[in-house]
Length: 323
Image 1 (cartoon, rainbow, N blue to C red):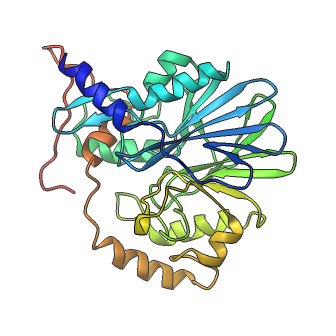
Image 2: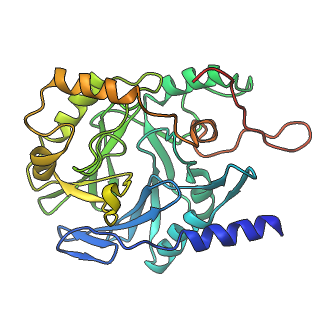
């Protein structure tokens, strides 16, 4: 009963939030080119935007950066947010080809394992996940059976590796800095380009991602962002988070031109050394994300909970005085 009540409350709190996209947006849906369909889903509790990306011809789709709800007070998980994706896939009569992660998130639990069980598809993440697993496997003193080779995921994507979503051509771009394993996903249709950037960039009025996690590096992030901003001006960039600065409405998509012109951390006039100095100074003022400890333990396992112990219960660890 307690679990059901918790899930109902989370469901009520996670009803779709109005989103602001672009001129061709219909509520939270965008059509790019001829056949690239993008649905955005905002999770208020973690300020995360998940995406359903579909080829309208074949109805094949990818799910990007999903959320498994987690209540840190009770230790309960709930699938309310992920079920919104499940419902939408079914509404669209779509088939899931990919369940993609841009990186091992530190601010929410991934629903990748749950979605694969419900909808099928291949889980995929950047090949440098192995670096993250080695660092955090040691930090959490993970069980002897915890593999540090990325084998929890079906596919490990290399930089510039291509893959298909129906007839849509997609490409993985290694964009490290926030973490060593960060990937952006570029999809093109009819000459129009969409890039799902994970936590490299935020909307122009909020700036860029932090670089103080293990293996993170501000100089590397600067170069990754400059790589993204080398795309044509009209390229759409889809965010993974939006924190509603100044109380504005939630937004999730911008363009390369807008980022170059007005990103408060890395507009065209900011050089590398200035960015690094700003980013490192700012990171010293930031607290750890509220859900970093549970999130990383689950996400480095592709959304699976740690294996149950002898009593049948899964446990999350809290390493003291380490972060």
